[in-house]
Amino acid sequence: MGGADTPAVLGGCGGFSTGSGSGGVEGTLSFTTWGTDAELAGFRAAIAAFEEANEGAGGLR
Image (cartoon, rainbow, N blue to C red; front, side, top):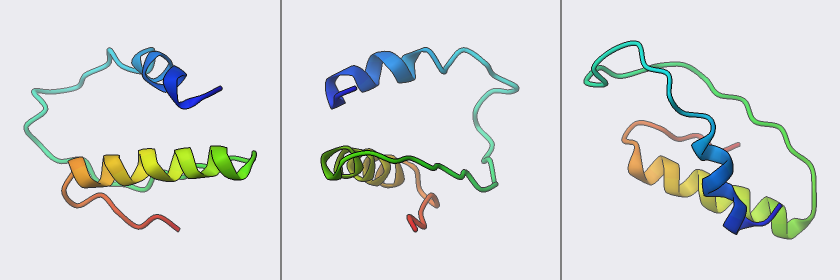
């Protein structure tokens, strides 16, 4: 799966809401993957973009 496929795939993950969206959410998200160096670079770029767009998110390990 390439980077161009990501928006369509992630779009299928939405649709659930428990509130107005004005409150913050806390917790830890664990993500495990394996693949090529190019796939890892794509995941890291997506994570960096998410962290930049979401204040307080961070901690790529």
